[in-house]
Amino acid sequence: MEVTGQLGVRPDRLQLDKLSPLGRWIFETGTKYNFINKTLTAPDVEPEPDVEYLLGDRYLDFSLCLVFAFAFPVIRAILRKYVYEPWGRYAMGFGDPKKTDKRMDEAAKAKMRKWCESCWKMTIYIAFTTLALVVCWGEVWFTDSRYWWLGCTRFPPCNLPVSRGLLLFYCAETGFYLQAIHFLAFHEERRKDWLESMIHHVVTSGLLLYSYALNFTRVGVVVILIHDVSDIFLEMAKLARYADREPTIGTPAFVVFFLSWVACRVVIFPLFVIRSTLFEPVVLVGAYLGVEPRPHWEIFNGLLILLFVLHLYWTVLIFEVIRKQLTDGSLTDVREKDP
Image (cartoon, rainbow, N blue to C red; front, side, top):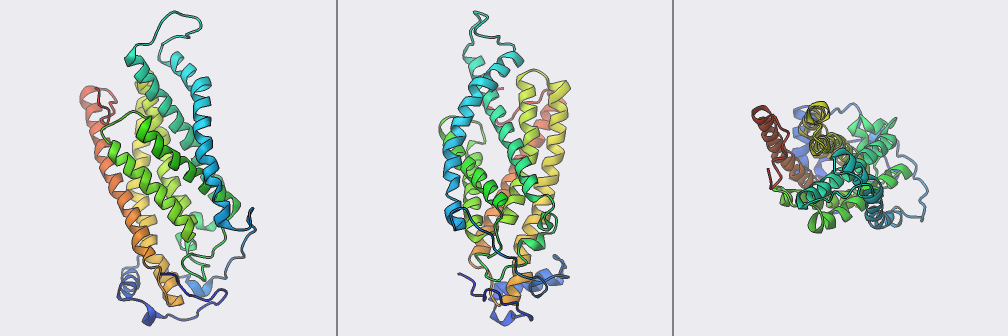
């Protein structure tokens, strides 16, 4: 259902009588238990001016994600041939094929595929984390979730402007996950959590497309940043294991990964992000416009909660890795089919 608040009109009073029973419950619960900070609400914030789009419309601009979806496999192939494989041969002791007659057996080839896969993922996570920080840094909404919603006068889709930095980030991230579904299905190594990984990729792609359509882009970039930052250290730890550098690099990287995973995905994600998406759109904006973002409220929060459930599942796997480290002294990926 599309909200029908008037563009440019700043409501000055609550319109709870226009909310559904669910909307009133959200408002009353969020207010009663102080889940949100109500020192700023819709009447206190001026609407932000719109920005100029490259193609005249933010939806047309978003078609750039298809360019990224086709470009990423090409970039991946180039990096694999000229960077990842030569580096992997050196780091894992396989030797330079131009200078030695040593051939790689099937086990070595499988290890090289995993090496290149982790190299690519680490490259992507570093690039996206850097881009997200550049886009978010200095923005008031980076640390104050109320500004993910405040300023909307039509809701949803929220009529907050989408900066070119946000547009670029969303296009790149969406393009990556669209092509990642294909790679996970047909090219990457099958692991025990293949189905969960596929669900994660599909849900993430859906969230990106859906949140852009509704213009929940500010919360979207924070969600992606929370997800990507810890994965840098996971891939680093895996690369160290493949190269037999666990004590010097692998274990410290895994410790950083574990701490950042718990902080970002198990604590910050539910308490900062989901708390906001559950209550702030209705309490701070919808209640003053006399409308609520349904059925988008249920769909968007349902997808975020599904992601959180996946986080909890993977947290169990991480504790299994820690248990094996303490008992066997090796950072074994419990998702691998082989020991």
